[in-house]
Each structure stands twice: as structure tokens, then as C-alpha cells.
Length: 293
Length: 270
Image (cartoon, rainbow over all chains, first blue to last red; front, side, top):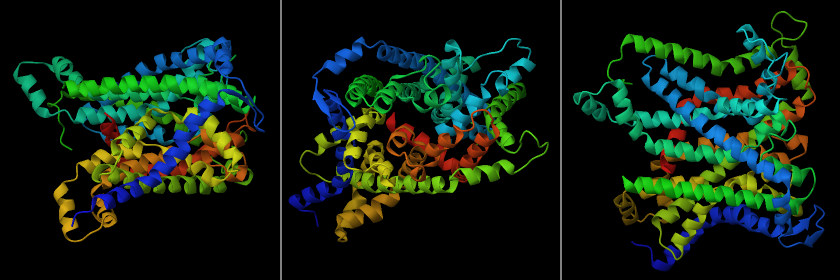
């Protein structure tokens, strides 16, 4: 027997309700409330003064905030190509391996499940000057000078990139590997019949077939890079001299060290809009790609 | 597993093997070093468990583990439950504003949790809900990824199966629990694994919302212990190894499912 229309309505709402409750209370409401908070000077005890858009004006004048945005974009520009390319290369190696593929896969992926505290704690020690293992290893290879991975502003981001890469490239790796495994043999067969060699097959079969996965990886990696927090807090503390302070870290400082909640809320809102726009553009682009095939 | 590429020349295989070995070593090295360091002190030449004794005495590792486990398990259970209910409703039932609600939920995919931390903190602070274990659970269930992944999966389940069940007099909840959920097992496992891992490793929200040591998770508590030992490496590395052991165990048991889960979710998002 079919459900009566009204009964179906009620059932539908009832089943949707639990999730919607969480969604509205802990995602939608905070998002909107966050905007409201940003229009105030807001301290923890609850003293609020309405300041309209002053927080936003102040932020745009704030060099530290602008720098944090710059650092965030810089990290995104550095990390997205690196993590995507490495993911692809590792997947190609794994895909081509006849023996040992399973072990290789596990080893590359394993760091992904570690927590950011463990990852940061290990790398901050490995990258120490004078006593760190990385430098000792490099010295043994013949490098004369001491590299200041964490205290040299030019190297600090590289250090965070290295740690992040070791930690998270496994995700991109798995996505690419799945994409590679999905390419039907028949395509390679056809190419071979047409006289293509290995390199041609790669360019004309493998790469085009990976377009969708590549776009997905790029999109996921971009958003992930925008949001980094734990590594730069725990490895470099946002330093040296604030050079690794991303916007998320800036928000953390303003809200929880300075108790300037209204101000931090405004910064949060700006970051939200930036990421939302990026996600939207990428999603549209991805859908278009899908539809176009 | 049948190799799909044409038969490789053994030279190419040897190059790949070499590359894979080098890369593998580089990936393993930090973990091996971490464990190695934990088993040595300045004085001892051989392996010693002294560091472990010290860490277990000074850091409430078991409490932290218990908290991590409770929180992550709770989140995973709730996510699976409420998301699959919602996905079923969105996929199979008709009611007003259904499409609008779905779009609303999807916009949540583009809202990063990091930008909600400040308002969430003020919200929880006002209600006195900080420093509890459910402080960590509640916001984590709000994410739409589960609904986003499960709904298309449910869409793909043939309508006649459902028709047949209704003919037999089964109600909606019965259909949901005995028909849809078992059929959705791959999607549900993938979701469960990802949710669990993310919950275990979450840092930003826990950092600001839980400041009492006894309520911390492993991820949160580790740096508080390690900050006292910035000069020597052995104790922090020991804490790291202890924190990693259970995760390593879970990984060795479930690695296939974990990696499949990522590939599956990635496929759905693409």
C-alpha cells in the first residue's frame, strides 16, 4: 500500500529532522551569528558595542591581516601543484609496479591517519638545525652549510610544505591510483594497435582519462590548503616573525589570545566568503566538465 | 590482481622497484626514527623502556585515549544514523521544499568548519557547554558530507525492491533499516571510516573548546605534554609512539577498507 501524501510528508520531515537539527544549530546558525558578531566589538564576558562595518574596515587596513591572506594564498599556490603532482607520480609508480604494490601503497598512505600533533612533533624535531636528523643526513651527503628550516623565513614555508606533503599526499595518491585503475584496458589496446608507444599512450590515453580525478584532487587540495592550521601552529608557531601565519592562525590569535571576538569573527567571515567562492567556482567548473563529456 | 598494462620490460620494472623502495624508505623513515628515539635515552646504549614508564606516569594517555575513542565513536555513530535517515528521506520520499532543503544542505559543503569556530565558541560558552565530551561531538555531526555521499547511493537502489517490500506491508523505517542500510554498506563503511579518522585527528575546535586536561583527546593532549620537553626528544617521541600504536593497529586491520573508502568518497565528489 502506498503512503498517503500527508503521511509521506510527515515521514519525510521526521527522517530529515535529526540531521537538520545538527545542521541548523551547529552550522547554519553559527555562520549567520558569526556575521552578526562581526558587526560588534565583542568580548568574552559579553560586553558588546555595535560598530557596524568598522571591524571590516579595520581589517582591510591591518597589515597583519593582509599578510595572513598573502601567506595563505602563497601556501595554496605552493602546495596545490606540489601535492597534486606528487600524488600523481606516486600513483603512477604504484600502478606500474608488479610486485610490492600493496606494501608501497600502505607505506605512502600510512601518514594520513596520524594526527597533526604527532606529525608536527616529529617534523619539528627532524628539522632542527645542528641536532636534527634531516640536517645530519644532508651533511653526510656532503652539504656543508647548516640549513635553518624553521627559523629562516624563506625556509619555514618549505618546512611546512614538506611535513604536509608527507602527511597528506597519501589521499591524492589513492584518488589518482583509483583513477588509473579505472582506465579500461581496451583504450590501451586500441592505442597499441594504432602504433602508439608507451609515452604516446601516456599522453593520449592516461592523461586525458585522469582529467576528472585531477580536477577533483586540485579542488580538494586547494580547499585543504586554505584551511591549514595545526602544522603551522605546532611546527613554526606562525613564525618566524609571523611569516607562516595564515588567516586561520590569525583568527585563532585574535579570538583566543586577544579576546577580540568581533574582530576575529569579521576575519572568519571574510575567509568563509573567499573559500565559499573558490569552492563554488570549482564545483561549477567540475560539473561543467562532467556535463561536457 | 591481474596487471593491466602491457608486459613491462624488466628494466622498467627494476627502475620502478628502485624508485618505490627509495620513496618507501623516505616515507617510513620519520616513523622508524620516532620509534627508535623512544626506545633510547642519553645514557643507555641499548633499547630501554624507561621513557615509556615516564610518559605513562606523567601524561594521562589512557584518559586521552578513552576520550578520543568515545568522541570518535559517538560522532561516527551519530553521523551514520542521522545522515542515512536524511539521505533516505531526500532520496525516496516526497515532501514540500525537499529540493530547497537539499540545496541548503549542499551549501554547507562549502562552509569550512574553521570559519565557524569563533561563533561556535561564543555559542557554547554562553550555554556553559565547553569542556565536555559532547562539546566535541555536536558540531562534528553537522557536516553534510555524509548526506551528500549517501543520497546518490540511495538514488541508485532499484525502486522495485522498495515496491516489493511495501507490498509486503513494510513501513518506511523497516524499509530503511532492513533494505537500504544493508545495500548501502560500502558507502556506509567508507563514511564511517572517514568520519572516525577525521574525528580522531580534529584539532582546531578541540583546541579552543576543551581546555581541561582530563577531557582532552589524544590529538589535543599530546602537545600539552610535549611542550614541557622542548629540548630533549625522547619523551615527546615516546608519547607520539604511544599515540600512534592504536591507530597503527586499526590501520593494519582496516587499511584496505580505509583506502577504498577514500577512493569511493572521492568518486562521489567528482
